[in-house]
Amino acid sequence: MGLTGYAWAAMQGLVNGLNYANVISDDAGGDKPADGARDILLVGLDSRTDAQGNPLPREVLDELRAGDSDGELNTDSLIFVHIPNDGSKAVAISLPRDTYVDIPGGFGKHKINSAYARAMLQARKDLQKQGVTDPKELDVKANQAGAKELIQTVEKLTGSTIDNYAAVNLLGFSDITKAIGGVDVCLNNNVKDEYSGANFTKGQHTISGVEALEFVRQRHGLPRGDLDRVVRQQVFMAGMARKVLSAGTLTNPSKLNDLIEAIKKSVVLNQNWDIFGFAQQMKGLTGGQLEFRTIPVKNVEYKTPEDGVAIQVDPAEVKQFVQGLAGPPPGQQSPTAQQADTNANKATTVDVRNASGRTGLAASVAKTLEGKGFTSGETSNATSRKTTVIWVPKGGKDAGQAVADALGGSPTIQEDKSVQSGHVTVFLGADYQGPSSNASGAGAATGPTSQAAAPPPDTEEDKPITAEGVPCVN
Image (cartoon, rainbow, N blue to C red; front, side, top):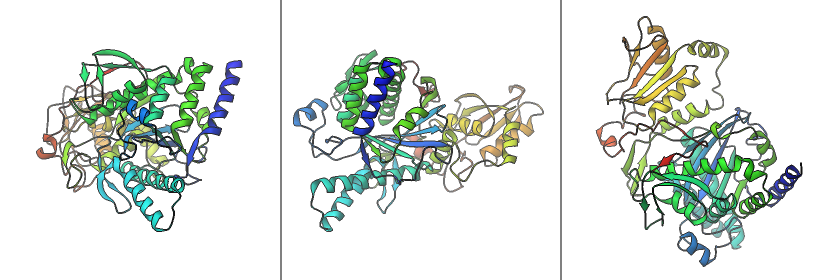
């Protein structure tokens, strides 16, 4: 009871000392968002200031290997988190920093990590033209404009409404990892990178502070570049969640106090976020109920007109992937008749084979079908094929047609002796577009040009990262 009382008092101190920003409307989200789930945007800012806007001292910048204090501000880590109102599970979806997207507000198509900076710099210029000269006011309003633009960009890409926003800077990330006593990670091979400073041997390590920053920031020298960095960030976040969810952190007064001080110094939240209520909502969450995924990508070496090499995505495919994991957007909830179909679909187990060459598509489609009531079977990669086909057992064409209707398009349905009774096997070909796509949208860039630069499929790619265990990564 004493520990619980201390934790409550410490939490009260955290709430009173947090930094808030006016970046989401007051009525957004609420105690329980109307669509049945809370969608949160977590942002890692490559910022050379603290949460109050004060420049970091030179010795701190040197320790963090962060360069100049006036360096360009980018959002180098973007994670969309979907949590049902009952707090029973959470899905965290990474958006690679170099994803090439349409940035609303007339900014055009650019890398997603520049949305914040572009709007912030434009707002600063506009404010100065209006006669605003106070540095603090300029900084606060310009950063709010940057955060709002980033939120709109993510909403447009994912098709979901952001209920809450949380941003952490470089110093805060370092201090938070120290406060919880480090995070366990594991590497497949030795790495040494002069750009990030990462220098680790193969195997498991417990890292914090500067080493933690080096681990999550490395992308040079990794087989899949920025995609491997995204996986690094996911396993690290999973490890942090495992530490914080454990009793050893939340019932240790010293660790809890250090954690709260680090958060107060470096984290910015949207105003009116009820942290107490959120903590109550999340109290039943365990490591196995937290999954990390990455949006599907088409080309990791896409040459842009202005921004160099970026990551190309299909917006329709991204929306389908996110909604497949997070559920349908507001206004598209299933009616009673569809619920009956969903119940009937449960008798069919669907195995999905990715023969399209697009990373993560099998997992995305499996989740979509699961959301329509089908029982999830195995997911794996298969030999490349141009057209999507559905295999069914003898007498199983009705079940195959139900799957075809859920997938969209007109895939061929054929009987095959290899398919078990009660199962349907889907082979996703290069022509697969998905139920929310159109003929000129998704799948239009699935030819040889877009796939030439894509990394080879990994047999483990469809397995989500969770906060249980310490998986080894590149």
